[in-house]
Amino acid sequence: MSNDRRIFLKQAATLAGAFSAASLFNQLHAEEWKHAAKKIEHLDAAQAAQDEDYWSTIQSAYTVNPNIINLNNGGVSPSPLVVQQAVARFNDLSNEGPSYFMWRILDQGREPLREKLALLAGILPDEVAVNRNSTEALNTVIYGLDLKSGDEVIGTKQDYPNMIQAWRQRALREGIVYKQLSFDFPIEDDAQIVKAYEDAITSKTKILHVTHMINWVGQIMPVRKICDMAHAKGIEVICDGAHSFGLLDFKIPELGCDYFGTSLHKFLSAPIGSGMLWIKKEKVAKIWPLLCNGDPHSSDIRKFETLGTRSFPIEQGIGEAINFHEAIGSKRKEERIRYLKNYWASKVKEIPKVKLHTSLKPEYSCAICGVSIDGMTPGELDNALFGQYKIHTVGIVWENISAVRVTPHVYTKIADLDKLVKAIGEIATKK
Image 1: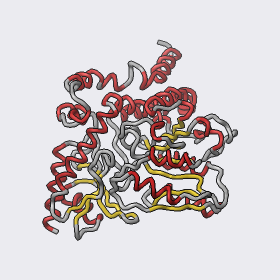
Image 2: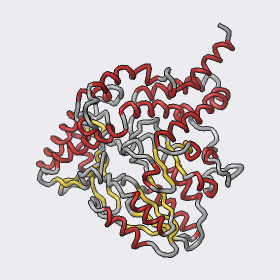
Image 3: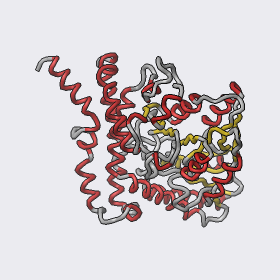
Image 4: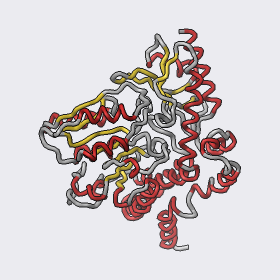
């Protein structure tokens, strides 16, 4: 076979990539997963969430370290093996001739990826920009909006720090007014939350910044109700969906927001360092790019992707994560992870000295749950869990929140959660 022929076949295989019959997912998992899914097809999503035989198939697709129990998936989630292999394959190809294979071959794969992300999110391809994380996506909008001195933005003290700092920087440089609400979570009353935003609005308010799922304790915010209220007053809404996309079963337009940013390396289990920005098509032109672009007022969403040299292997690996996610099913995945959270949380809440900082009602939480023990700081509890039991969580001390955040994922085993419950019980008793 000639070298030209080999190069042509390699290019064709690469461009077919994750969205073809030859995808890595189809090669490694398709048949086995179809067989496993057939056994639970008579069950609804909530019932399927408790079928351990089915979920053992999903768990085996990950390569998590058996020497620790990783329950900090709220920070970043591991990718399944098939996604890791995709990234490695694209990385190997890139290094055969970076400027050729990256710019002339892999770069062509962004459009199929854009279309697949749009389908998953229920939006138009021309509304999707592929980037590196929620901070980049949301900072694009925060810095890209035309606001003037005196214009008001309303967020909360429980929003993610990088977004808070971005708004504060605009306030320092340009004189906009950044106002922050503060909530005592958990809250099981949508009207209370909506009213708090509404009461803070004045004639100068231009933007509401809303976090779909509060990263500290997992509170699900009533985004649609907040958006409907804001739009009735002529106010736009930015939604931080870092922890909700790939976890909750929804389409972005259902939220009613104007702008949405997310990290794909959390619950979608895409390669670490991948994210997505969504802007309503009619609003793209008015948002300035975060990085330079030759036509900053273009209505082409791609103006937000002028990053220079980027990791094409990471970007293209997203496709296999989408295949993995869709093979499980959004609703089935949401119910499984909520079941895992409620499994351990409902047990430890009965232990003396233990307090939960998250609702267990399905409309107000899913994966993330905060827990504390009387007389212990979050750092002390976090250290005890890892030092004595090799259970990895994260201690949270932020504004009025003081708890350890626990976040399972689809690869988490019931046996590991039993160890968590036992550990919390023993620690609480000793304390």
